[in-house]
Length: 344
Image (cartoon, rainbow, N blue to C red; front, side, top):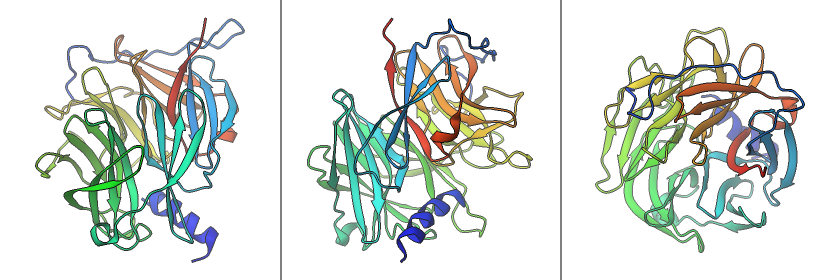
């Protein structure tokens, strides 16, 4: 397969595509004041572009700065297969031809990285496998991956779960199969992985939202009120495990329209966070980001008039948007992967 066709095949394969708890009540949308010379950022969000370029994005000013680049990342970063431990970022890249599966391990303190080949045993995971998602399991201090057979073939259904040693990248099958095509968003909460799939314009795949029980291997279908398609860009509040994400909206004239929501995983009730404005996600694939220090869920959004950084503060229950300056360098293949507190 032609090198550049192969790369764009991966992109187009992807793009073809809550009652609140006591401390997360109904949101109170607000508009941030105009940025002026006295506005100071309190956090810098670290964004990764698909070619390894890193950016810092000011949480209040919207200022975007290029910082360092992770060497070895070429083009095909899988944004739902990026996760972090307390010390490292783990970034999966699927290169071909020739077929090569890599995990780039980025030290969050030293800002250095190394790239390692990850090998999937063919007798368990198929002939041409690749990672669809990657999660950090803090309980066992290892990685959990969802590995798809025939990664390059969109309609193929079978994926399998495995634990991955974060140092050696040794893979241990969990003997759990997922027979649903086009997995686009996952989020680990305790012993369950909440998972979304989509149906392509050709009709292949499924529009399903379900959880995978890591202990029993059971798949349980989940229903959300007014769900046309399952949620994307999932993240979790590490304080109470409430899910945050975006529910795609159909029938809108705005491409990629989606509504930010909270999802209570105990009863599947949904809270709309920004009901009076039409917005969408910059990148169909990937995750939103939870800042445990500030208690905020953040993500890049688009609208008919601006490109912004969306915030939902779990303590104040307030929604706000920071308009971003000069966003062109970010491209549409970018995701927030880390955060840095600004020294006063």
